[in-house]
Length: 451
Image (cartoon, rainbow, N blue to C red; front, side, top):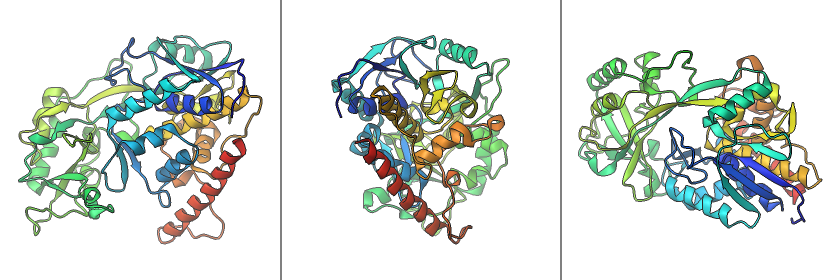
């Protein structure tokens, strides 16, 4: 679709949401300016000035588009010519049934694609006020700058909501003792041998696990400033917080031993298992799965080296914790993701209260399409309710309870029931397949209507 443009779409933030929004709008024929404060203004978590930099995990989670809501969201984004998914597929790493990517080449490719697009330009510098004119998308992510956060708070009249997000450590593969650790995906999941050996496993006996939990609970941890509260998002809890909820919590979470057989001692069933996943294409870097942490650096190295196989581990990056910001979208946004008090401004990505790379990019995709359609004089209805995209945007713009609103991953609990299907675990497989079949048909029809 092409058009002679007299109006420009301005996007604040070049993360997952901003990059995808820019790509979608530009492909619809709209001129786009991405305003990115990095590298001029740095954040705690970012390392580069690339667009769509991955700062936490390198995983987009499950790629199963028939039985998993995240996988369905992958499918919908691919069907809409999504830049983030196409680039993730290009830089895919073995990860069993998940979609993990080589993070640096991924960000470099996203940046190059947008820089090369004739309808896209990038301006570096901080936007500190809410614009009063023009078409804008605020996609500043969880690390919204202090100045812009204050401007949003002043405009909305509501207290800024915040939670704390933690980053997992990354280890050099060559420093791991492979006489102790072994390669295996849980339940040998994956179609190829590489996929079936996508995770590195470190086993623990009961005594080793108990000693690890003791050390974890006693370790020095990041303190919070006066007035801050530790309102963590449950999908990204630090391991210390999980341990504080019960000594067995980690063993039934990221350290669960099920579906794994110790290649060195096949007859010994581990009491707990720490898994690491490839973080780059070379396989030289591995991140510890589910091990987000707020331990201080000295304590991290001491405690993590208690894990069998990691006694001599060398760390490429230690874990950390930072403050994340999001708005109370159910009260502030309409179903087109526009700020009710200033409808020339849309919000997208994690700042709206979705959690995860995929969900953030998906909300960017939707915001970019809705904004471009409005600029072109052909406004569109928002995504159909029975799609993954529609279920998620409905949740954040009105389906959630505003008083208890917290960041949300996409999940089948957000979907309308399919008539005639039984609930409960026994009927789950058929029910999920019905959800995804219905969603794919509705999403494809919505995308085709915009062509």
